[in-house]
Image 1 (cartoon, each protein chain N blue to C red):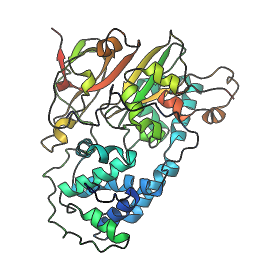
Image 2 (image 1 turned 135 degrees about the horizontal axis):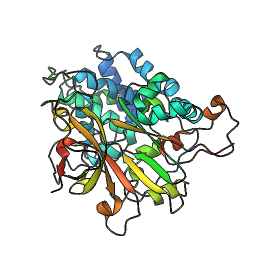
Image 3 (image 1 turned 90 degrees about the horizontal axis):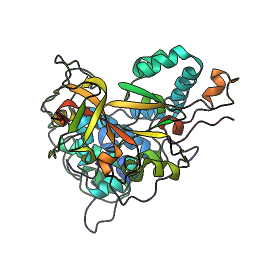
Image 4 (image 1 turned 90 degrees about the vertical axis):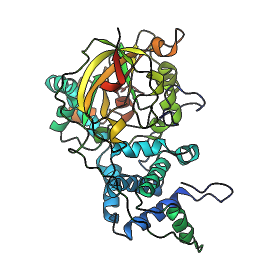
Length: 198
Length: 221
């Protein structure tokens, strides 16, 4: 931890560099493995995976049924799974039911389908308030829900991970699965936004 | 433990941040490195993800908050690596000072003290022979407990009643696994709590589900 008392605070960038040196010079961590893990989450594993799952569910009723029945198995069909997504439960948002995901204890998040969490998801204000006043929090994030919409907050307190299947917006009936993929946002798959037609 | 990490329902954090389009995965280079080093520190120390989360929740307020999420990864890695004696206390700061041209004395490399721990299998899901103690639709109560060590039962749910919505795959119990005293796999239940049960009659109408281990729950008699 950073030095206590009146000592000048060392920047996290410098401390990270120091940690990396200490571990790599003793052969405990391979710097190439560090690079690979970073590249993995910067380029390969992100919300595009989840968008493909959602677009498939919107266009294939049998897949949608399997996805809601066993999320882990259904995303595996598309080649997705792995770290922080041992058990995935998919819940559907409709005109009258709204699910939104949080982790109040840390920042658990379904990495395999959404990548690493965005800054707002890790923010104390989101973690603290989403389980206490979700309607107010969602409005503050730009999502106003009608009074008759029933909200369920999914607090990720075990290794179970949650993914929201957003409602398919009206006006997208003629769009292909590939076109739909580009509409689906990370925010909608966490439940802090809706998908909107182009 | 009732630490800073257990934030559900607490006040004083200010407004939420609206999502920003095009936010990079890592805003600064060190954040990606801290993430990866934190990830690998678990393996280097011979720990597990529950023990890593418990390290994070034992950080002091400044170490937990000041440098955000990836600051937590960095500081958790330091705690994991010093407690397993891979690194000496102060080793990172001393090296950091030397990296910027100071002449700090670095502590000697200690004799590693990895825990006597090996997972029974990969990941956290396990098979449990006993049938689930609670059924879907059954009313249960989250125990009013406040253990000194790691737990995944948040304070805001303790003592409150809910309904079992789903039975999830059985998994390693974090409360013991984090302390290397056994996996104790248990059934896990998604329990639905009404907002008025949690926060009183004036609460917004909504429900919260938590995924709770069997030993966190008791029957309502």
